[in-house]
Amino acid sequence: MGYSAEVVRRARARLAQEKEDRESENRQHLALAYEKVPRIREIDHELRVTMAKTAQAAFLSGSDGRDALLALREQNKGLQQERERLARENFEEGFLDDAPICAVCGGSGYVGTAMCQCLMELCRQEQKREVSILSGSRDSFSHFELSYYPDRPDPKYGVSPRTVMEKNLRDCRNYAASFSAKSENLLFSGNTGLGKTFLSGCIARTVADRGFSVAYETASRLFTKMERARFERDEQCRLETEGALAADLLILDDLGTEMTGQFTSVALYSLINDRLLAGKPTIISTNLTTEEIARRYTPQIASRLRGSYKRVPFVGEDIRILKNGGTAL
Picture 1 (spheres, rainbow, N blue to C red):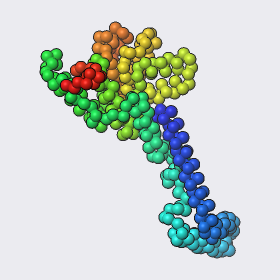
Picture 2 (picture 1 turned 90 degrees about the vertical axis):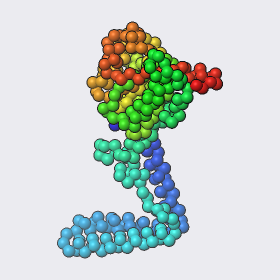
Picture 3 (picture 1 turned 90 degrees about the horizontal axis):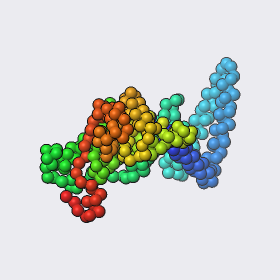
Picture 4 (picture 1 turned 135 degrees about the vertical axis):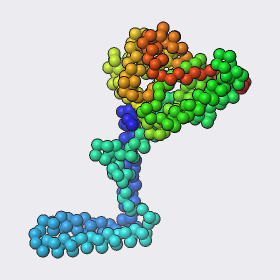
């Protein structure tokens, strides 16, 4: 599960700060212990001395060296036991443990070249926070209000819009809960105000919370970044674009609202094709039909979407208008 360079950077900065805070706390505890129980300071000094003598004894040969080493180890053990006893008698449990922020990696964030679980958890948190900011909401599936969708059968679908949206909600919830590298590509299509962005955000947050890397971008924002990275050599835009395209799940919202030109069509085709070849799931939401996509971009893009994406139709009336009018169906 890869995370963008920016997410990893923020997570590493948090881990470094937490490590610094823990070390500062440990130093403060030790200073208080020395002040309250001076004998602990003496023991620590004696332990440093015995450690140096132990190192010297290790170089001695024969029985003299072995005897000296054993004696020093016994002395060291006795000092440590005395220190532990004084700590128990004078301070709360763990006050002088001097424990690192992570027992596995010591706070570095890595075990060898592999990312430690402590850093992975911070990446997950940063990813989830970023998704919430970009999607503009912290709502969840449980907040999706089906009562705004008419329950009268629509001749166009043979069932009511509410029935269609009940299925969409159920399918989106299941998609997020079982997301994997083998998940389908989805095309959310329908008029404005029908919940495409809402459910996209719910999927993004659920998938990110499960530890996958998720990039949530509007088409306008992503294509602007790609253009700046390509023509203006903008390093930040390049890193953010690469992170989005490499994410386990990419959600491209509001396709069709961006300024369209030759670069956008080429970039969109490359995005769709590259992620299909890499086997990385993508969700695209749009107000356009596939016929309109063919006219606005290229027939090849429309063909890719028809053949490789599962269409999820959003139907009903604009919820934002209903809310503003104070009417719920």
